[in-house]
Image (cartoon, rainbow, N blue to C red; front, side):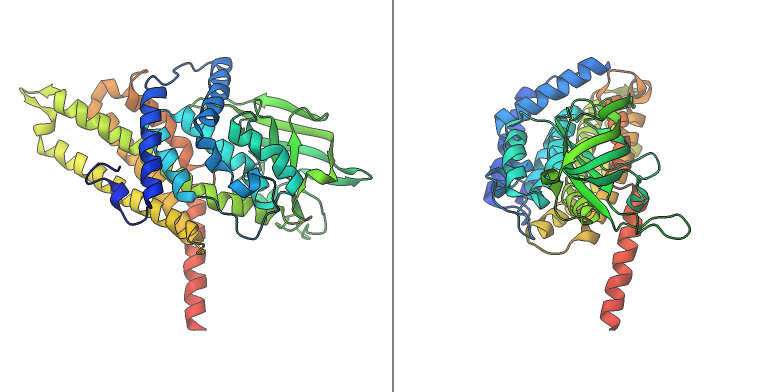
Length: 407
């Protein structure tokens, strides 16, 4: 049951979503009561592996892959991800432990291309292990010179008698170094290179590459302010059988965008979870902290700050679950997804910053929840499409819709 007055009473949700939210909340409160605080690479890698196993055993990772994919059936144009469930789970996990949210989110993003475009064989071989928490997935799209501009990627897939060989580099790859397989996007055609040397999105193809494949290596491990497994991958004459291809040659860009369109909404859910935890911490601290003989919460400036935080979170949450509901309804929701991702991550950054300010000196001390949140939220404004990219998507969609009405 949803608590009285909960956002779960909103009409976006079914009874099964409310029941799911309650179960995830109970599990997270018990399992994630003491989030891992180790930040050295080996400890973070180990904690992430354990979280993937725990999420699988608890049954949460089954939402990362549609049921038909797990059973190896051929995909259709529309894959039935439960985007509301993904966002609800990520909101709850992020509220408790950023690494748990990361582990869950990457199981979905890392395997999503298989659910969307994989053959029956690929689905049967990979997705049940993802769902069980027995195989760690990764999404290998970004390159040193191709992040937001996916069309600029240079990693090359060359035809061989047995399939393809990959040559090139991928970077900023989450789960890099601990993943059991990577969904890799590479260029299979040079015909789309323009006279000025730039490239288009045509000719990009997607592949599933096992981590143990010869010619694939981890060339660099990357450390960030919010520790999680991140690395640069190098491919040198890396053989990939033709059966490991996702979809047809040249479908890679569409597959990548369809995958991001599903899981981008869940990023918004995670941002809302971070923001809600910051508000919870700010409320508790301002009620207990005494300043000039009064509780910090008694000051009007504090109340105004808390009000702005709460209103921002509700607005972000409404946009998030509207986008998820539209996706689950089968509607085209590119604009709404971009709005949710942009507003939720930007709002969470502001909310957490205000929480840090209310904590004063404690807010920037290592070990404080709000200090950890301040580091955790920053990456969400960048990955799976930076805020600036979301603005471009929204603007493009607005212009397209306006042109359609005129015609």
